[in-house]
Image 1: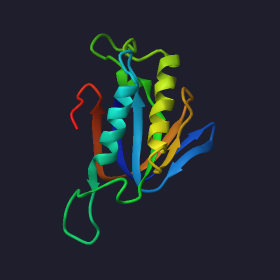
Image 2: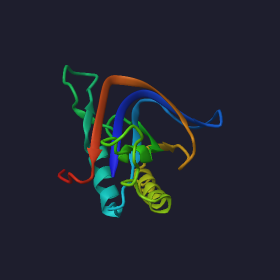
Image 3: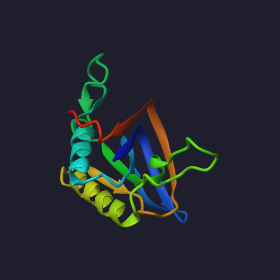
Image 4: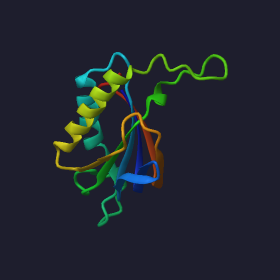
Length: 152
């Protein structure tokens, strides 16, 4: 699994011009699933995301001392199979590394439920829908997380 994590002041996802998910400060998570992914891939990413210290402590000069739980942040999760696009050949990406929709949706839902079980506010897009995603970056801070590198 791959996640593009963006620290945001706010983010919103719309489907057919209707808002389906919206958060204030927190993380926008673009999630891609590949064939080899399992629930343990999702478990690792959830734990990593919750522990990443990307927020400053307002009462000090410290930089990146707090995690999302400590600051009461929110998460917006959006499915993004194009994270597994291969652009090495030609001018049109190949998506053969992306998981089939049935597998990807199952793991996407598992990932979202694991996040929700932590009592953090979690909003989502709609799996496989054409979505409009807007955000106000904070920093900007953008990270690429890959469950193939599973060291906490």
